[in-house]
Image (tube, rainbow, N blue to C red; front, side, top):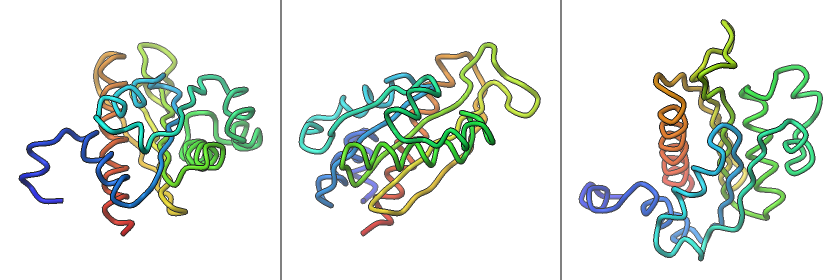
Amino acid sequence: MNKTYEKEHSLEERVVALLKQRGYTATTTESCTGGLLAGRLLNAAGVSEVYKEGYITYSNEAKIKLLGVSPKTLEAYGAVSEQTALEMAQGAARQAGAQAALATTGIAGPDGGTLEKPVGLVYIGCYVNHATAVEEHVFAGERAQVRNLAVEAALNLLERMLCANI
């Protein structure tokens, strides 16, 4: 994507354009962002051609039931983990029949953090045409800021993976 296009189009518009170029459909599954990611993606005109469905899987039960996240993964690593984010992204893609999926799981705060998993810790899982990636972030700020920063990071990850998945 050229720099002029990047300046003239929002991140979500660029992601939707890349999905269209590749003939891919997308889905989202969210825990800590609770629908903000889907909402941000849906801001882009023409998204209805590529966006299939979204899941808000806030509870462990929802992650298991809707996405097929392994109870063993949740028990061993917790809901806020690289492993869970990966299984969430893979499960969402499988359930929706989509070629691309984004997953967010984290601790937005203001409480819920520990020394091992502080407030602001977010894992973002991304699945694009059988390739996967997980990013770990620790965002600073209030709850709303953490959630918005997680959405931005998720869309950036998807954009990078779509550019690499030619």
